Image 1 (cartoon, helix red, strand yellow):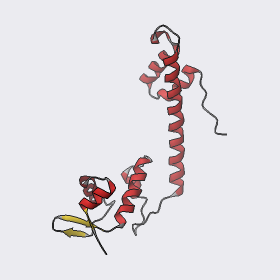
Image 2 (cartoon, rainbow, N blue to C red):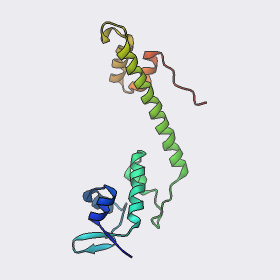
Image 3 (cartoon, rainbow, N blue to C red):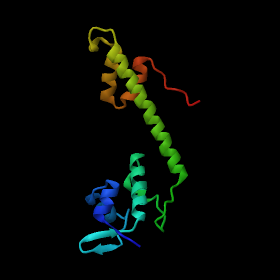
Image 4 (spheres, rainbow, N blue to C red):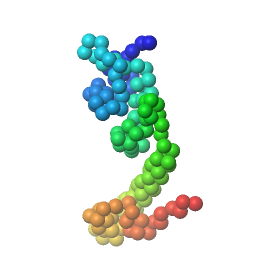
Length: 148
């Protein structure tokens, strides 16, 4: 079996060596040993790092991601957790679309000044109270799309 040293893993994955060392420290990946001062990994680390990257891109914490691997190190991802995260991403995308639409409304508003635009003033008010996207629906008269 051919091993990959930490530099080669970093080059193939784009994950910096410092991050690889951190992932090893917290138990996300494991080095098989060292050759001199350089950590050595088996080829499976590439798949594991791809799964970690996908989990991070989906918004999972490193703790969540660590829990997605079974005792044998193989992926054991609870489907219910994936469904819940997909639902949350859907809500975020919907809110971002609403915020985008509200901003476009304000940008195209015929009011002489943004401060004279009721939608813009509502956005300002919403920004000081938390969720701008949720409140922008009322400011522009936009409705949240039904889930069908």
